[in-house]
Amino acid sequence: MIFYYLDASAWVKRYYRESGTDSIQSLFATEQRLACASLGFVEVMATLARKRKAHEIDAVAFEQKSGELESDWERFVQIQLSVEAVELAKVMARMLALRGADAVHLASALILQERFVDEDDRLVLVTSDRELIAAGEVSGMIVMNPEEGESIL
Image (cartoon, rainbow, N blue to C red):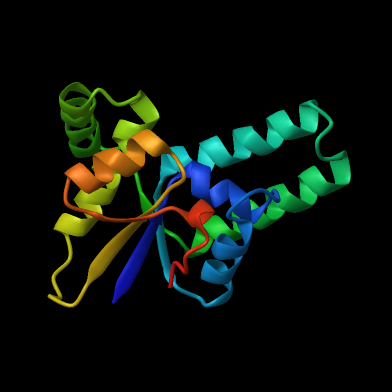
């Protein structure tokens, strides 16, 4: 089974049209297994709120998109910010000079991947963040950038 770990840079494309939105929409439409750290949920909500404040989306759209985000979050494998995740994120930040959120996302994806018991299980890190792409690749992960137009599935 394939699990798709979305960081906020990829996940926000579900609610706000930008480069890579079509790839993310197709991922959601096919009922794939999705995962993210709880931090990602907060980041996407904050991005929508900032877009509302900047008048890039109106109040009605903000409420609708916030509701969709809440609903979508329920279907995710949710990786909570545990002591284990914090410790690994600290190591990743130090080793790869990552920003804090990127380190948390990479650590969370690696923790999920470690827990796979079926040898056919695979994790794909879906991100548009250049530094996280590089860190994921260095860590031996399969990485997909929805902005590159290639099929994620």
